[in-house]
Amino acid sequence: MIKFIYFLCLCISHNFGANIDYYQIVNKANRAIYLNDFDEAKKQLDLGFSINSNPYHYDVYKWILCNSKSGNKQENTKWLNFLVLEKKIPPKLLKHKLANFLTTEDVRFLDAMPYEAPKSKIKTLLLDMIKKDQAIRDFSSCGNIYDENQNSDKNCLKKLFARRDSLDEVHAKEFVSLMEKYGIPSENDLGVYLKGDVNSNYNQLFYILGIHFAQTGYRAKIVDIYKKAHDEYKFHPELYGSFYEFIQSQNLDFGKRLLHSPVSKVDGRYYKPFIVYTDSTLDSINENRLKIGLDSVQINREQVLSDILCPTKRGEIKIISFPSIVEVPYWLVKGAFEKENRDLDNYLIDLKTIKSACEKE
Image (cartoon, rainbow, N blue to C red):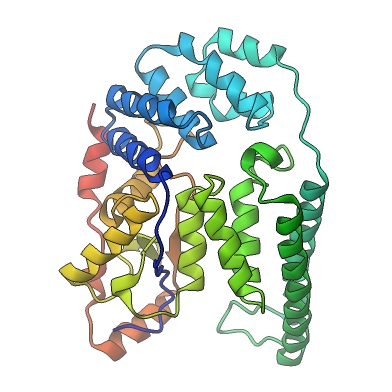
């Protein structure tokens, strides 16, 4: 097995609640969107929303996409109202995000909607935390640490890594205390876009803080918090799966894992994740994916690549809202495959089927 390449996976050992029914329905809608069958996708989303009155914001985006493609744009206002009032998305941002799918009446509706960005103590504290978290990870003063051909100042890095690790411990403790005091905030509580722009979103905040804090002495508590957030519908399976596959990335028992990252990118080309494949391994992986509400890894792979290769059909609306693509340097992959005496081309993904699905009417 190729052990040195960074692949992301997940070990699942617990059961989940009824929210899986909702996610399975949305997965059917995603499959239909992939095939450009927008009528069927809208039908599935309507069914999903009937059992979950507070759907994930991106599922509502997809509903508006499908509604537009089905010729029923006049029905958009209900969900536009929901996105502004419940998900706290600024109307101006919605106009940009959904520009290709809104009627003149929709735009007027959004223009007339009052909006006030959500404010809370926990939001302020979390935004301050992520700001400091990112600042402490600026290692540019020590040279280019990502270029194997350039030397970096090892003593400088050692000091910065120590400061980073110390701050992570402090922040992890504060984060656990915040969650215990206020409860886990949802995207309704904080707003989908924390600063009112697409560059500061709910999923990214909790993913970054989660993977950093899971490397501290508070790992077990962080894991429990994130599990609870998923069970309570607050974390989407795409966010939850991404977090778990990071913290379990060193566990080589693939039979118990959830391989959330379906694509590896090397030197501009797309490959299947670098693991040893067997039918039993894939069956086990897919079984565990379904347990938290994700579709099979094969289906997910096609959807992630479709979002990259077929942008014209869906504008800015992707099938997968929080995709995982692992980018690996070619020199690292080449060395690992040579050592294992394996053929890299056997992992190369054939894009013809995906491109043909793009063209299907």
